[in-house]
Every structure is written in C-alpha cells, then in structure tokens.
Amino acid sequence: MPWPHIQLSLPDWVDVYIAAHPSTFKKVEDRMALVVELARQNVIRGTGGPFAAGVFELETGRLIAPGINMVVSSNCSVAHAEILALAIAQQKLGTFNLRRDDAMEFELVTSAEPCAMCLGAIPWSGVVSLVCGARDEDARNIGFDEGPKVADWVKEMTDRGIRVQRDLCREQAREVLRSYHEQGGPIYNGR
Amino acid sequence: MPWPHIQLSLPDWVDVYIAAHPSTFKKVEDRMALVVELARQNVIRGTGGPFAAGVFELETGRLIAPGINMVVSSNCSVAHAEILALAIAQQKLGTFNLRRDDAMEFELVTSAEPCAMCLGAIPWSGVVSLVCGARDEDARNIGFDEGPKVADWVKEMTDRGIRVQRDLCREQAREVLRSYHEQGGPIYNGR
Image (cartoon, rainbow over all chains, first blue to last red; front, side):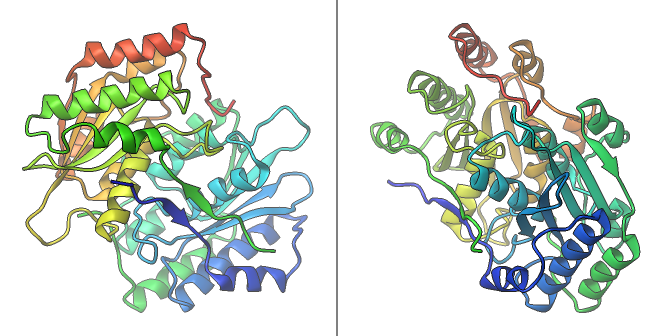
C-alpha cells in the first residue's frame, strides 16, 4: 500500500498578494506588518486560522518564505504558520539548517507567540532571531490551547543562540485574533 | 514568485518492507517492534536519522501510517518521524483531528520519546495514546538536543486525555541509536 504524500501548498492569493508588494522589508516593523496582514487575509479569504509568519534574511529583510495557518484547509494539525514558513524557506534554500556556514542569517517573524510545537521547531530550523506579535495569552483568550511550553522559553531560545523580540505590533496582531473569534472561526485543539 | 511546495514522501523501501509483513499488530509490543525495525532500516538504508514512529488504530492495532526521520534526506528540519506519521495518518483519514466523533481511537508509537517539537504536535493531532521506546536521555546521550520540554510532560499529556506508556522495548530502541552513533551518523541540532 503506497502511503499518502504530505503536500502543503500556499493558496494562490499569497503569491498574488506578495507579488503586489515590496519583497524587501528593511525595518522589522515592516516585516511584522506584512505578516499581520497575511494573517488578516487568511481569515478574510477563509483559508485558515488567524496566524501567519515569515522567514526573512536578517540583514537585508528580503522575504524568503511566508507561512499561513492551514490546519483546517489542508487537513493537517501540523500546518501552523511557523512550520510552513520554516519548511518552505528550507525547501527554497535547499538546506535543513538555515544556520549554514555562509554569511546569511535568518529571522522568523510570527503574528503570535509560537505554540509548544512551533517553539520546539524553531531551534531545529537554524533561524537566529524570533520576532513575535500577539502574546501567547492573546491566543489563549480566544480559546486556542498553546500547549505545554516551558515557563522560561525566551531564555531557552536565547541559550540556543536565538534572539527573541516580543510585542511588536501586538495590538494589530491581537485585532486579527479578535475578529476571527467574532466571526466564529473554528478553534481546534485536538480535543 | 510561486513558493515551493512542502512535499514529504516516504522512501519506497517503507512500502516494500511493510507490504511484506502483517499490517495489524494486536499487541503494543508488536507495534513497537515494527517501529524500532523501521528506525533500524532507516539507518541501514541511509534515508534518515535513527527514529521511526507509527499511528495505529488503538483497538485493532491496524497500522494507519508509518513515519521515519527524514530531516537530512528531505532538507526539512520538521521532518521528524512522529510529525510524518501524524500528518500521513491525517492525510489518509481526511481529517486534521484523529479524535473525531466516531468510534475509532488512535495511538502514536514512537521509537524514542518525542523532542519538544513532536511533544507539542501530539495534542493537536488527536491521538489518545502515546507509547515510547528509548528515553529522551538516550537520544541526548548520542548528541541530539531534545529541546525545551516541560519537566512534567507526561502529566501535560495525561491532562489532555493522552495516555502515556514509556520504556517499551527501550533496550532495542536504544541499540538503534547506539549503532547510528557508532557509524558516525549526522547529529543535527540547528546550531
């Protein structure tokens, strides 16, 4: 019996949306603004949960890979925005480790603090910087379980050479969560 | 610019190996024996790290989906055995939540205790049972970082309705880790 492939493809609107905008984001606020807008678009277009992420080249701000939550639309509980952004970036650059021996370093920007799974995925990916919009409790406030995260997760990242910046555009990111909740978007916690 | 798809396909030998063996494993020891053998084969055939997993129908022991570590071979740091088994099972059954409202329940059997990422993925998947072979420290002893895991992860799983069984065939599972290490297999921690 041949086993199904895992295939995750971003919906067409992501291509179209990004092609219509600049592809380099010098300031980290602009990287977050893109990511929060992708989260908002994901809700509006009904292609997933209220979360998005992006991998950027740290110094230049070039977008390497976007990611959006596709859990429901792809029938895959692993398809969180951060996982997609990291895996697509690795696919694009042809490496399982973004911390290769060359000069480039990479940053993961995410519209909400990562859940336990995504937090665990970050050190394996090779990014050196993590930037978060909404807080963990903002996601929990609309009903999402964030999973068993160690209390000092920022220190755990820092100890592994990953810089963490929190609360960037938190209010805008939280607004996307709120509007998803008000529309009655599905909350899926595997229960 | 179109973004690369994430595509993960098990190597052909997995099909061939499983087709040559029974597909139903009434006893949990037999489920683990299959999983440990898949981990061993993955090392021998050079298709990935010394880890494998499987999703089984809890009551009947029918194999729903196998998974093997494919981090290096697929250029994807997310491609741990547990992630593949869970995602392939969901693909096969057409649901992002294996805890659906019908009569079937599912078990994840893994050759080694899950890393922080895979541990975080388990509650989102909908499995109701987790069975582990080697211990977390057995993987760490050969150089793998297991990531930031909460100390009471068994309780965290139990609180979410997931039964945990540890140390099943631990010695056999540890032997696969040891032989991988002795062969100089790559240890990848994203550093």
